[in-house]
Image (cartoon, rainbow, N blue to C red; front, top):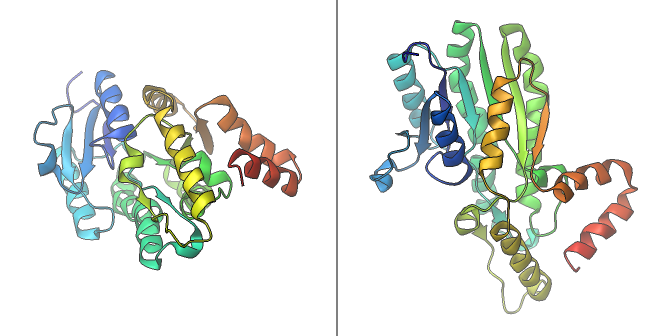
Length: 272
């Protein structure tokens, strides 16, 4: 198959973690893949696929990356909004600018990248947009409340937006991963555990638990395989969840248990 017949994919945040795993997998399946990084020069040895400069907080860089793909290929078949950032801390102690920065990356970023690709997808009369959210977006988790909120907001926005796009033969879906063994914890904003904080012990203990979960997470290949199945699906579902059974089952429990019973389960899990 020559390049004009291959599926063209753009993955935001493709230089490491889940984005890189998805990109490498799709390359092996014969796709043309572009990943993005705020600073591709930091990855001079990166050879898996092409990295474009794109900062989801900068509309001009978004437009430049999309224009580059359009000029080279005349189309973009799939957008995977994968770029995201973790954030932890007692909500009372997280600086407002860090909350705004997190929503800029996890919520406004995917919206703005999607806005940039929609005119092209409308022109070609088809397209698929996959928003990478999180199982944490289905529930308010202690000391991860801002992260839960940003990912939950993207889930809900996708539900609305996909209905608006159906008339243009453009599909949109969510895929919510659980904990995977990636470097996300290293890039996460951690509110410091303050010596005189009323949250010192509970937050400190929870932070260790969160990092342990990531370190013991599933192989990112599982996420890549799930994304490939979504791409091959003729009629993608609204929501997909990928991860350990208990993490996915926690969403079911939230739906069927009384609110306070579910809250008690979470508090027991986080030893609160």
